[in-house]
Image (cartoon, rainbow, N blue to C red; front, side, top):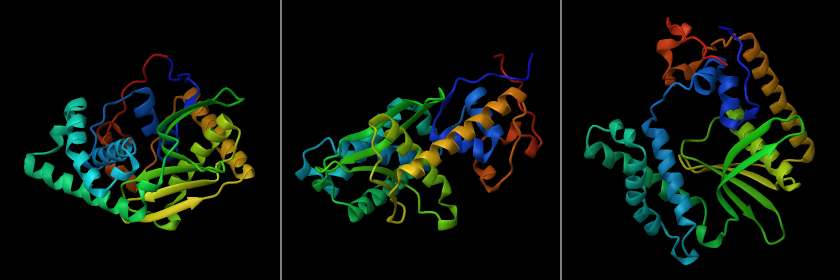
Length: 267
């Protein structure tokens, strides 16, 4: 069996970030598709996102903290029904109650940061798929797209964790510029603002990209894809050890921790 494996030319912000973090992690997720159990923190993020999406479906005057909190339990029941493995994260209802209280804290903080009654987003959970001239397809989901009456475009992304130290903002910035490149190529217009809302501590980060910056971001994305293709041709998906390894579920099959990766699937 050949060690090389051709890849479909499709890339998302999360998979690009995986490759930059650790090529072997990219392989495990994209090629081997090894199963991963969601963490309680990741599941809480999904829940809070779903509540905020549902909130903007309601009439503006009803978008209050009380309404948002009333949506929490029903959205959790929907999530639990659609993802049975979610219940396995908790040993009992007491743990679920503590977890839900943490989600309530995040929703309360959202209302300290913004007044949803004053907003009418153009899109929520917007799925984007754009093919660049090179043939590479970019995919991603934008949490919220706001368009002002004068036409200015704002891309909003909710983060349920705390804001990173400025030295470690590169990953979040890359994700937002990835979205901006897709919107620029899709709409033919440079977004006015890219906004990150960190519900964990109430911090807001924003960028006001220029066309030159988006061209540079597109070049970077293409460079990452070329590196992925080169790695796929070689079949050498090397691990890259970092502090993030502590959160990886694949240590048992990682050479950095004494494991052996499974054989590459047939092309």
